[in-house]
Image 1 (cartoon, rainbow, N blue to C red):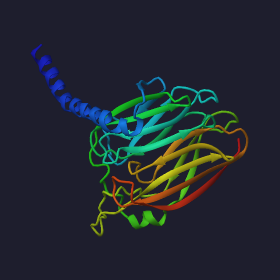
Image 2 (cartoon, one colour):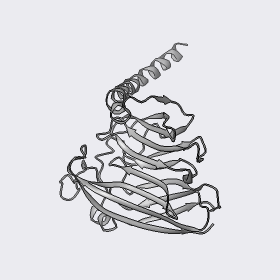
Image 3 (cartoon, rainbow, N blue to C red):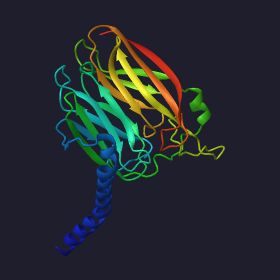
Image 4 (tube, rainbow, N blue to C red):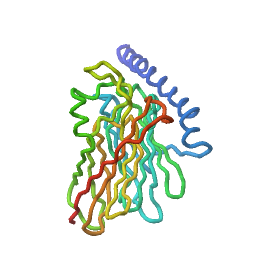
Length: 277
């Protein structure tokens, strides 16, 4: 009995720092992030509309896998219009703003992100009628935004903008089809040291992603430095016939990792993929 009580005490003591960090995150959310992104709007906290999958502890803080799973069908009258993702304790909390349409089929989105310190990660869904629903996960991580880009930045820059689509499963007319988009881009945070020159590299990251099928929008995203090196997105679209899946990706360069008032538009990269159901 004494041994069991001792184990319980150790377990509770271990949880206390996590609880304290999570409570501090709520202060950041309530006092900073919610007023910035959803001032004066009511947000229900629930897993009924979307659910967020994330590891409790990140194996690699610069490559944390996230998956948002939608719980409703995308119909013309009732659908998830956008999902905003935030990491409370990141230097720049904004991860991405992902817009969907009924032609998306499912408002699911998966990616890899950087988490700089122990933090709540939030996904807020907005319905086409304006209703907001939030789900969150607490992830333990450290140093994701300052982790080195890789062994050879020159090689990464040489293949900058190369992209590839990969379909997952069979393509069927009128049914949601899972697709993976892989973008070659170092997505430099502005907090990383060049391993050769020892200088901090200026922030340089993918800012806009626009995916369409036969000219109709499927996924529109605004992203930032929290997206990992070589952005990788998984999402859905509904093919109504044979056609062309197309993506335009635009990057940007900013003077600092935490401000967006001094940025320079970069290049736009395009890739297409033929779809034959």
